[in-house]
Amino acid sequence: MFKLLKFTVVVVFVLNLVSCKKDKLITDSSAKIRFSQDSVLFDTVFTSVGSSTRNIRVINNNSQRIKISNIQLQNGNASPFIINVDGSPGKTFTDIEIAAHDSMYVFIQVNINPNASPVISPFIISDKLIFTVNGNIQSLNLEAWGQNAYYHRPTNAIKFKDGTYLAYSLISSTPGVDTTWLKDKPHVIYGYLVVDSAQKLTINAGIQIYMNYKAGFWVYKDGQLKILGQKDMEVVFQGARKEKDYTDEPGQWDRIWINEGSDNNIINYAIIKNGYIGLQTEVIGNTIGGLGRLKLTNTKIQNMSKWGLYSLAYHIYGGNNVISNCQEQSLNIELGGQYTFLHCTFANFWSKDKPRDKPTVNITNYNATQVLPLDSCYFGNCIIDGTLANELNLDLNYTNLTYQPKPIFSNSWLKTNNSVATASVYINVKTGASLNYRNKGTYDFTLPLSETQAQNFSHPKATADATKFLLDLKGAARNTASVTAGAYEVN
Image 1: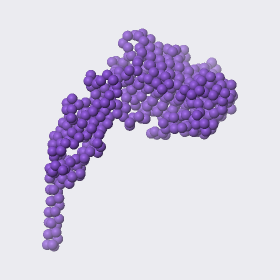
Image 2: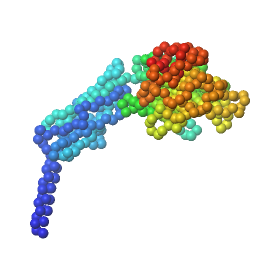
Image 3: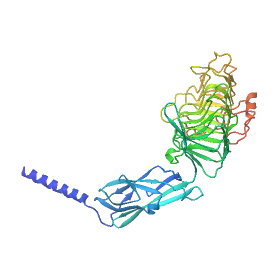
Image 4: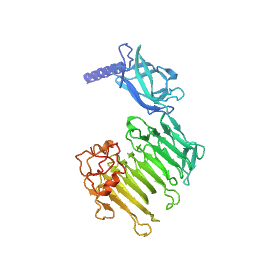
């Protein structure tokens, strides 16, 4: 028993020695810290808009505690960067200790002063994070890309019956004034930006529009929108977060919403992505007599957390569009309207979050209280495709003899298990398994020559519709004698 007690005392003594050694500060100049990375890079940050937070681990690989005498930004109080050490933000910190074989996190943010930034965009902002350890100077490079922008922040608010508010600003404070945006700087939108009644907004080619969370774009009744993009100079609507994690994240902003009244809304060569609803065209007044009009061409709508294109009792003429990969429908038409879609690809291979259970295209002309006219609903040389067995839902009410729906699918390729024998509805259509696109995950819905299912439509209507869009979405010439359905010519 005496021997066992003696052994226990020795073990405790040794453990105490080890513990004391670990608790002792290492002051040797050869003892340094290590970083989890040698630099911190921020993606493009808009002037006056804070970025997301980056972090690094500061690691002590030594067998004893180490003291960092000083942590500071090289540019001090003039630095656009802010660091957070041990829960406290600031520009400089002293006497920070890290236990043996342990680490700590340093969090870094950047805010760019628009008054101090250069006129030319984008520009680079840099600094260094400097650590003083046992007389050694160790540093970490910090770099951010900054960019000037036009900012649209709410100046008013609408209160709804349920007590909620919608914060918004107008494109101009003067009624009836036409506004034109140029492409010298991107536009960043907070809340809703409204084109009010009798106002007109023209957005020229190449403009980038960044929408903050829940931000939206509203063309109110009798307002007018003209998006005049060009091939390779598209107008882009997207979320305001520019970090890589948000490149393909849906639901980052709300929607583009166009009401009735104007007969001259135009969207040409636009890319609308990563929002909740890509484009919503809807009457809010007299549903039967209040049709608004939109010409939608050469446009991509993709990666929406609800619908790509939602339309209620509207009039849309569309061609050379790709509407793809949305949580619910790529195209959802409710309460009738008038529609023409030529050479459009409606493809839904959504693979995020919960599985999709709604068809790519849904068309209905009624609700619980009324049946409204679907005077024309023509799909010519189109593709309707996706992961479901049936990607076309026609939920039509024929009981109102005054408003008989008239859907027509002509020379189109359809992923459907609907019967296509009704000649008045289906003209020379093809059905089958999903097409072999080049890359559905990156929204590349071009078709190789080897994919023959959507090719070789030679019906007179196919030729007539192809001549209305002689160039495909990429600018390639169409074969009007042997037509390929969808927005792209095969190659």
